[in-house]
Length: 265
Figure 1 (cartoon, helix red, strand yellow):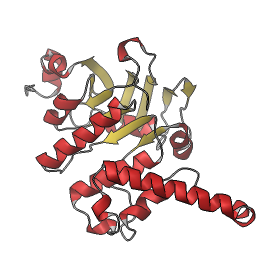
Figure 2 (spheres, one colour; figure 1 turned 135 degrees about the vertical axis):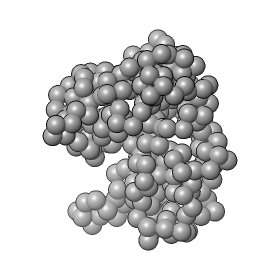
Figure 3 (cartoon, helix red, strand yellow; figure 1 turned 180 degrees about the horizontal axis):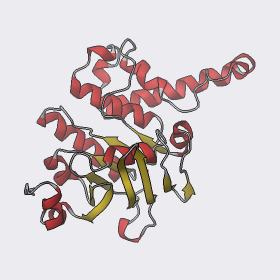
Figure 4 (cartoon, one colour; figure 1 turned 135 degrees about the horizontal axis):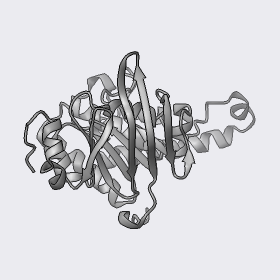
C-alpha cells in the first residue's frame, strides 16, 4: 500500500451527521456527529449506554437509523444493506467472533473473501477455469492474512478449538479478507491477555502504516492510549469531545461522563 495521506489535510473517509436511533422509549443516538480521517486509528469511547454499539450498528448497516446520514468515501450509505456496505470497502468485526466453529481457520477466512466463485451456478459451469483461478487467489490471500496475524500454525484447527485471543485474531482476519478501506473493530481486545493485546495493537498499527483507516470501539484505556489518535468520546448518544487521549482524559466533561472516575494517561 501507499503511504497514508496526512490526516489533518485529508477529507474524512467517514462522516456521520445527525444520526438518531430510538428503541421504544430509549434514545440510543441523539444527533451523533463524527468524522474519521483517512490513515488514522480513531477510538470511539464512552461510558456504558453512551451509544457506541448502536453507532457501529447504524454505520455498518446492521440496523437503520431513524434519521441522519452516514457518508463513506463521499457516498451516502445510510440504510444500505450490510453486504453492500462491506463490498464498498467499509468492513466491521464483531466483539464475539462470528466464524463457524466446525470449520477450520483457513475455511473461515476463505468464507469471507470477496467475489466468491461459488456464488453463481452458471459461471461455475461455463467458466470453471476462472472459478479455479479465483479460488487460488482467495487461498493465497487467506495464507497472507494468516501469516501477518500469526495464525499460520492453527490454519487447520477448527475455530472452536482456538483460544479467546486467537478467535479475536481470526475475527480481524475475517474482516481483512473483505479487503477493507475502513475497518471497524468492536472491542478487539476484550477478554484478551495483555501480551496478546499488545500484539493486536501492533497488527493494527501496521495496517494503519500501510494506509488503512481504523475505527475502534474499546473499553481498555491502556490500549486506546497506546494506539489511537484521535479519540472521540460519546455520552448520551452524542459526541462529547474529541482530541488526543491525553486531551480527552483531562477534560472535565469526560471525567463527569465517567461518573467522576478520572481516566489516567
